[in-house]
Image (cartoon, rainbow, N blue to C red; front, side):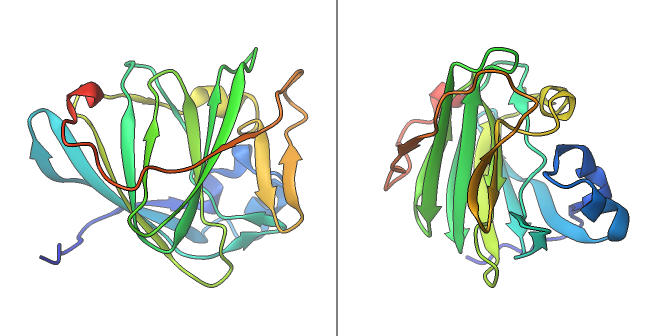
Length: 191
């Protein structure tokens, strides 16, 4: 069944300028649309199903990404790649980063973001659109401020590879993990 996507929340480059590797890009094209969030497409058992569409775009040397957030309400989140490919960059901690993990996922892959991790999703393609869905608790509240205060996550993904964000003191090397191949039957852990 094809879901008709209507009335997205649109993130423009000016909305994420303070988390970019090169903030000058936002000054050059502030109205550039980066990604589209279709929230609350359906709800089941206290969970919300959303879809996000991220067309390919280079922000200078950096691949297009979401603004990134933590869940101040203490909830996990589950993502499914529907089209294209994604890199989910997750980190535990802001002032003291304990762990940094990246998961590369393609169509059908599933990624779980644990409740105590902040995360950014990257479209690492210069030509293909990323379309992903997520399941999250209706009670989940996203907190963008930690990444805004540090000018982004602990790493940026660029055409030259990974670059550490110098606004963090001690950051562990990125740990790379594999995605899940199917959605868990019971999603109660997201509540």
